[in-house]
Amino acid sequence: MPWVSYLPALAQGALVTAWITLAAIAIGAVLAFVAGIARVEGGRAVSTLALCYTELFRGTSLLVQLFWFYYALPLVGISFEPVATGILVLALHVGAYGSEIVRGALTSVSVQQLEAARALNFGRMHTLIHVTLPQAIIEMLPAFGNLAIETLKLSSLVSLISIADLTFRAQSIRNLTLDSAGVYSLTLVGYFAMSLVLMLVMRLIERWARRGAAFPRAAHS
Amino acid sequence: MMYGFTWDTATPLTYAWSILPIILIGLTVTLKAAAAGFAIALVLGLVFAMLRRSRWRSVSWTTACVVEFLRDTPLLVQLFFLYYVLPEYGLTLPAFLTGALALGLQYSAYTSEVYRGGIEAVPRGQWEAATALNMTRMQTYRDIVVPQIVPRILPAMGNYMVAMIKETPVLSVITVLDMMALANMIGERTFEYLVPLTMVGLIFLILTLICSAGLHRLQKVLPKAGIPLR
Image 1 (spheres, each protein chain N blue to C red):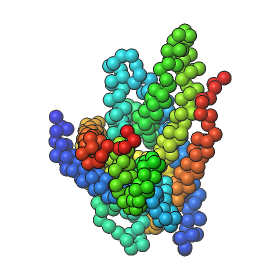
Image 2 (image 1 turned 45 degrees about the vertical axis):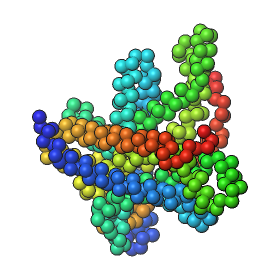
Image 3 (image 1 turned 60 degrees about the horizontal axis):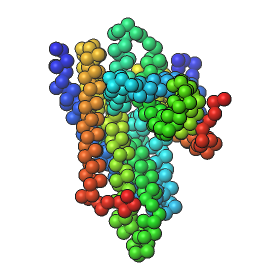
Image 4 (image 1 turned 30 degrees about the vertical axis):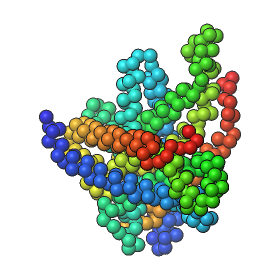
């Protein structure tokens, strides 16, 4: 059973992958909310800025962004640790996609709700926090779940900027043992298992949010 | 393949101008890979969607598992798998085809869901009406289902095509000489990565902006009710 001997190294790589993915999801979520809310609520300048960020990071490929931050930025004197670069770029990338989800959910809250809020003399901030966001977040969750899995998958690209994640470990083991089928099958299964866990967690969060423990049931349902 | 090209690193602008021809050669490879990959994804996705609707539980369940697996594992690892494992079983493909196959496999999982959603959106009554009119399954698909789902699925398919174009740089890791690979080669020789990588990013940005504008127009032009095939 040669493949059993790969497991410790692959598990170490999987930990790095998990850490990078979770960090990128956390930072990306913050970026998504900031950019998404800026698109909807911001003034002209702010929303244009947010639009530029979104289009820039959605429109260029993640690998290009990674290499740009890793190889090109140091030439003008800005450089980070590889892991920090990986997390930052991944977060910026998925944050741009997430901001579209946030924007879509915010604009899909019914107009009557906003009118009611205005009739009750709620301020803009008050309306956003107590009326729009609680309803919008529930709508966002399924899309965010998909994006979380997308983040996990995309995190494999950080192996190309010399971060020892699961894919990187798989490459090194393959170069050592030449057992491609065994190593890559294990790696694929590893990623699949991590996706399933991520999916399960997102389901639980969704169920918890919909149950109404955190938010009152959406008024239009 | 870089022989015969000279570059002028005097200023960023002249540098960009002198390497533009090389990058544009890479662009054709990128577009070809995306086109080949998308063709595979369209066909394979349809096959998966059909198998998923199979009458036999075992077939539909196995297909569901395969699709889920393809969708939840990274393209990069699938790419390495195909690139290194296929030759062990005697199937040695050129890197370009391996790359297109990997793109196609990953995206077939997405397109199969689009097909499935499109087919399921056709009301049950229409299937029953087709049965009542004694139409064969083939006729039902050709005359009833496909004309209605084409306008419904085209926008989603278009989005996936744009997404696929943006994922083609990954193919550079298995020695496909696309834009990304060429930009890296130029960077390695001149020790100046900023300009080539920025150019590649800009070209991708322009490409996706054009594609999204085109998709937006397409969505407006498409007839909502369906496209008659005859």
